[in-house]
Image (cartoon, rainbow, N blue to C red; front, side, top):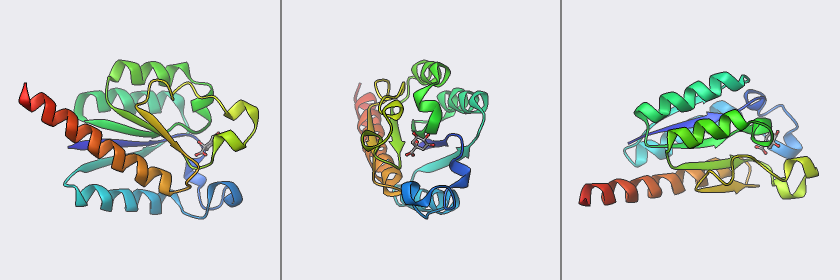
Length: 152
Ligand code: DQA
């Protein structure tokens, strides 16, 4: 199985960007941890970060062709992007939304995302661990789905 790990704008700055909110792990470290988790489950990951909405849309469209699920931290685009929402709806892949920070404890404009109701679920507030929890959930969901489709 193959999964897309998608990181939205400004997440390339993790480690030095507001560490009191987003923690000290860099994106490279987070991706390496996810790669190890995936390898332990015989799964393959494609990790991609962009500061551009269209590039994120294209990555989702590509995943629809060759992946079994998506973990997405849409970052600020989660609060604004109908395009990302539509791309996820079109892809019809099991998707888990991630946020490092607990959005419920932050500014009111962060409390809603346009992604949460098109995702299977959201994991927020656990820092870098949010990603591992999300991938763990996705591995289980995708495995259950492929077992079910194999039975049909
Ligand atoms: C974030 C939360 C968003 O509100 C913010 O714009 C980000 C990061 C998080 O991981 O906590 O860039 O998605």
